[in-house]
Length: 234
Image (tube, rainbow, N blue to C red; front, side, top):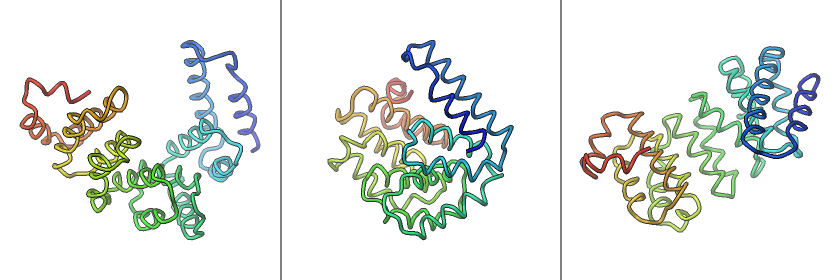
């Protein structure tokens, strides 16, 4: 990629000495500067080049995250192209296409409701549950995830999946406007199945739901008591 390729080379070669706090902060500043330069110098014209970078098999996840952040910040400017790309990819029927997952996640964040049908169709293209959860989350953000609630609830509270994906499932559920989910998340927290970071993520999911739907706070207080409320949120 002209210009941007050099940017990414510089980013990849910086701070090779380790990952202490100062180096992490320097790397984050460099990441932000890279994103800013691409947007300012390329703008929406960077779309095709960003997609090409996303498709490269030798790209690491960090580069892909930067690419999707650039596209996210371009927002509505690249929305029509993004919609076209996702539709074409889903239509192609390629199995387990990781770049498509990044784009679906982006479509959820950008609120591209016109893609609901295509994103739903993409579920049959993925064999692994981590990918399907990315798709469920995008659909939930787009207001179209309610149909998957019984499955997600099972994955959180009953299925063996809860030991691997429980925290991720909780975050997906947090985007659904279903009051019963407050009780589901409380059950998950009280179950003892989740510890450490996973438990904190489930509490974050519960917090997210209350932030999105303030009336749900009363449901939580009714379930756990006002004195115990702070133990269930972050």
